[in-house]
Image 1 (cartoon, helix red, strand yellow):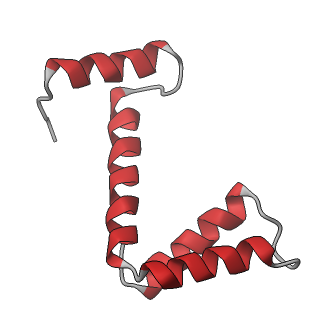
Image 2 (tube, one colour):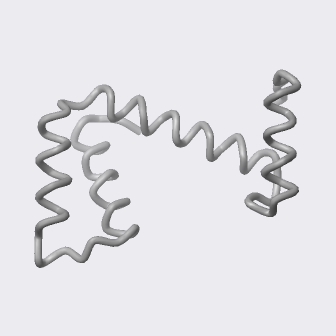
Length: 84
């Protein structure tokens, strides 16, 4: 796939690459689209349920609160609500 982006977004991508945050423009775009996808999934969910599940996970002594567990929680919510 080939895309054309506005100059200001091109500058943003180049800045991320120069800062060493990503190894390729494709990684920058993938990260941005993944974040956007997550926002779309969140918007589609019942916010009260999401808040309840996140608070439950944070307060649970059985689940350490770290990035890996957060990712698992988000993935389970995506699966439950049929989002990719």
